Length: 305
Ligand SMILES: C[S@@+](CC[C@H](N)C(=O)[O-])C[C@H]1O[C@@H](n2cnc3c(N)ncnc32)[C@H](O)[C@@H]1O
Image 1 (cartoon, rainbow, N blue to C red):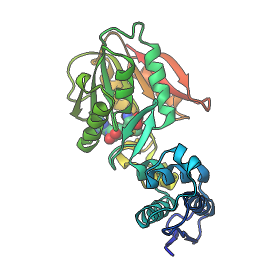
Image 2: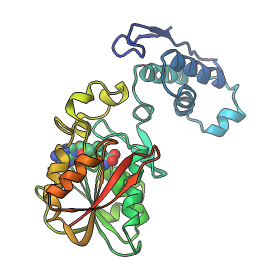
Image 3: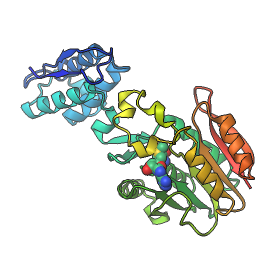
């Protein structure tokens, strides 16, 4: 019976050993129940959901087959895959990383070790940006700074059929993933990607600039959930000593990037509204609006020259 010693990041801060027993001949229902039990014992937040998502993927079936054919026996290969998935999840690897994909704006996105897992809160940036576009069929020039998986760029290109967009990131590896996501979602003919350091090498003007930059203060990162601290790329999280380094750099370059009447939409941390508003003013820019996430935190700010 495979076991996992969760000493390094055990959910309750002490050593636990979790048995996971899934073998060939176990029913699909039994296999998913075994995952759920292991996740409950590990103190994870959403055991039933995680078990269903990982179970369906390991078995290569959809939700319907799980309900209509629960007694089908799993094969040896499926049992091995289920066990591996369970061990990885109990070691606090996020479900999206195990699956290698995530959903954002109801679109599918591939992930790589160099890309952040897109967060539901980031959809606030998409909504805020779309609200600033008076005519969705207009030919808009869009820029996404720190594109990662490409989720913001691809979602906006999906909603704005005549828009052309550039996704920029420091990570060349992330850009390959973003380009694949643009292809998968049918917007590759209107998307381009470039490696760069924020606005440093950019010339030209954009009607809409969006960014979800790294904004966690460096000392905080170690204390985040293991799913984040150990599995999201540091470059996507680390906003410097006070979490605001990327905002300072991006805002300093914004006036030279925006076309007349153009807007910048930034995602911010749940407690950064006051600090970012001060940086906007210090950069000689105008705070145009704010938008809240589902938890009621101001999550996006829009900025104009
Ligand atoms: C918080 S992640 C956002 C990724 C994606 N846009 C999203 O919303 O899920 C920040 C991104 O900024 C990129 N990044 C970090 N420093 C950068 C820099 N100096 N210039 C450009 N991109 C940078 C990271 O590689 C990462 O992909």
